[in-house]
Length: 144
Image 1: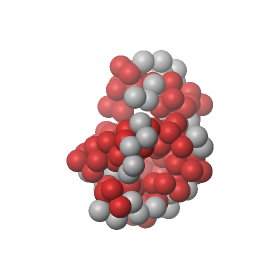
Image 2 (image 1 turned 90 degrees about the horizontal axis):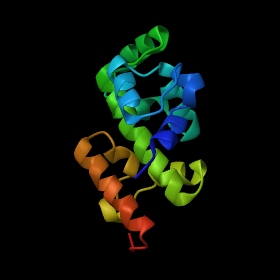
Image 3 (image 1 turned 90 degrees about the vertical axis):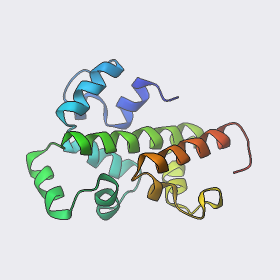
Image 4 (image 1 turned 120 degrees about the vertical axis):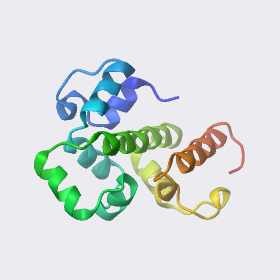
């Protein structure tokens, strides 16, 4: 399980989140209020995500994404989806030891999930659960 501290760091830390976040309850309140757009940009940069990939994962059309960038804040549901992406990207980083390796793994088709890319599955909660289980198997040395 990813620590709150690791998750906050993955989102860019206090300088990006613009407030002190120490507990899961603080993080929950932040998601409810809407994460800063800068947290999305941080995730995109760190895990080599393209704008169109993020639009699909967050279920946000390009014009809406441009409005979010201008307002510098995501809506609650978009923030929740970004949090799911951040959590699993952080877990992959922890398992593979580097963000670059985690990014490569997220983009690579995987036989264990029907040749889909883990990133593609993160658009739904069921898919995210599959990715989480796959990461758990990898972490425990099960061939996946």
